[in-house]
Image (cartoon, rainbow, N blue to C red; front, side, top):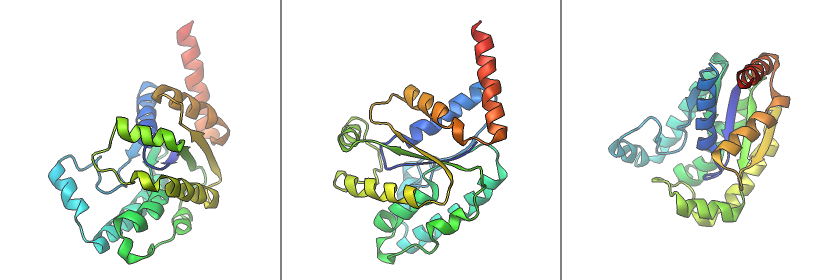
Length: 217
């Protein structure tokens, strides 16, 4: 599967990415994972020193770096048959001008322009959650470098909803994670994604399901 997983902070994007990685390993599928489009990048940059350096970059360099890495990952999503991209171009179109480089005023490349280069079998999953749930998750498991303040929750919900409606990606669906466990989220994804799979991925899913059924007998 070629998946782009989007949603405001604390909706379960990274949780679903990890769940799909684990599911893939269990079923002989290796997904290429890139979930490092937020600033600072906490997937590839392991030390706090490096993360602080990235956070303190001039805005013009942040914008250029983000633009270049999105262009690079458009190439990767065409290269890999099984790839998970967390946030990616849609998150950047929202978080970038708001939090990373507000003084620049606009994106150098439009969100739809990036989508012109995406494969036709790309699936977009929009994760959502109720405001009160987001607030509670912020308290229960605060991120070291939280991007979105509590005061911006409604604005971010509207922004992600709008980008989801505007996207040119044809294969897409929404999951409300408000009352879901990580295991429940993966289960719902595996079920809801079936109508959006291409022939190759559908056959893989059917073979995996048949194998699981045989193992239980």
